[in-house]
Length: 83
Image (cartoon, rainbow, N blue to C red; front, side, top):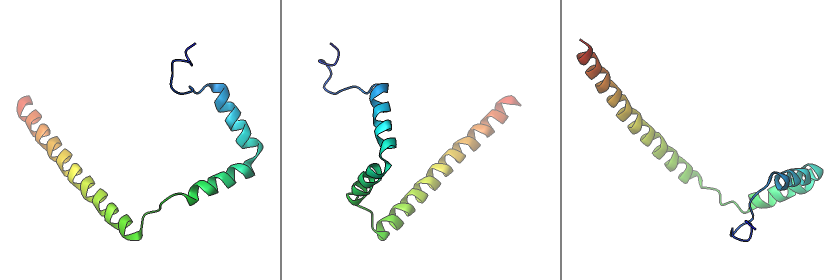
């Protein structure tokens, strides 16, 4: 009754166990499917990796400095209020 309302088939424990049993029964087939899926992946270029790594490091530093500044200010305010 519920399945007719939902636009998708909900996962059940049994369906997950069936899939795991299929993978365990034929690891060679599973690994072949993994290899085929990996061929479809569009890997980033070296320049993209370097540029995006720099962006992540820069944003991490900015967020770290911001949170450190907020922590410092709140610590000083707490010290002033306690005295």
